[in-house]
Length: 255
Image (cartoon, rainbow, N blue to C red; front, side, top):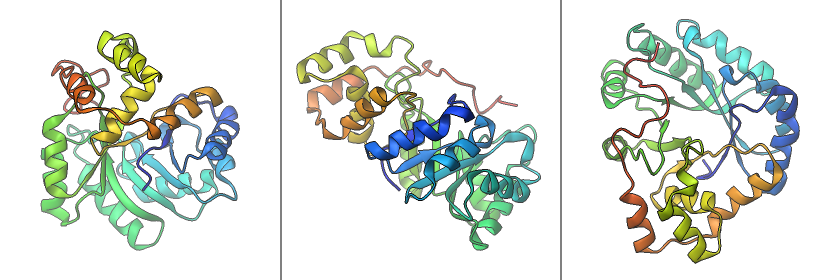
């Protein structure tokens, strides 16, 4: 799986094909979508006749019908298999995520997805998947950015051989890119603030899927692969971690 990919959250279906094609032409080789994004058809049009890694996700209301949900996603994407299929949220109160995981294991055996993983799962949820099925997720895609660094989750993933993939890697804007620490590093390197943050993820060995809705931002994000941060740069960003920095829903209470 490519370490740096292209997220497509909030990209309308009618625009997705053109934006995805722009990304591929620039050099992206990982495209991340999800059933709930409502743009799988457009993403599918954008990836036609290309060799790129495609990730999509099972939405919450289909955990008891995961096999059919994957078939629907494959049809919309216009492919026979995806590279990675994720359970989007654990929804512990509903308690169907193990059932969904079993269906995804079967889908992988049937060749409809090459890899399976989860998104927004806490260690206790993954422990249960492993205990009840013996199958470890390949990936856990979680909210992760300089103000919410998820160090315990990352350590757990490393211990279990799970790839950590960062969503909202630049913190949905929210002032992160204007932070003096980030802005100072960007100025010192003659780079954009977004490149600095993405480079920090890459330095940490994280997979990262920033979203961009235009060619200029797509190119800017991709250029982060050529930025090498110093140890001092990395330490300054490490110091920004805040246990209360979560921006999205809490997996413990998401319904």
